[in-house]
Length: 235
Image 1 (spheres, rainbow, N blue to C red):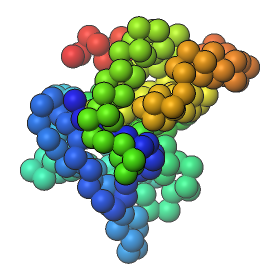
Image 2 (cartoon, one colour):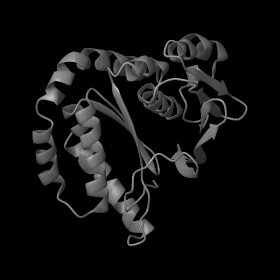
Image 3 (cartoon, one colour):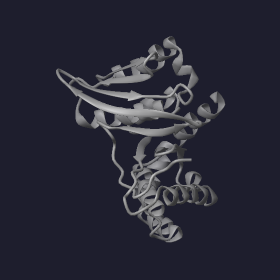
Image 4 (cartoon, rainbow, N blue to C red):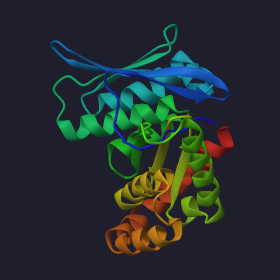
């Protein structure tokens, strides 16, 4: 499994990143074309994407109308393995959420996540792991593997009410609260760098999540569980 080190997290809108897709290396690129409308092109692997979405009728019935309700257009080019998000005159907030919804789709999640992400009933984040020059690739991969093992050992996804997908050099998370998604990003950064105690920071982050996190859980957890259940049934 390839992961990445020194951990600078950023959403690549120009360069292409190599990620692993079920043993297959795929180029997932995000490029922004600025003319009369802004367009994000997200490349995907057919081995990873939800199989239902490869059906053109399903895409047109379950994906396109959801984006259209928010003044956006999202098309799929199956031949090029691309999802094309046209943001037109939408405001920056909905564009940000729409990009994350497309990242979720390109990572294998089903169409059921799109509307809750756009409505901020479920929070999505993508973390790209970027190597730093002071760490070897072997150390990075070791840290990342250990991080995944520890995360599962402590059952963090269940405790924080989130669903996590791991790829070679990125992580996708969908969560019931902004605080949980943000805390996972912080935890990934600290632990893969290998400079901080996992246990110390879990406790600290959980304390920091008090309040708003609990309110979001109370409000969003039933929907999150429902979408996640359908995700598992359709796999």
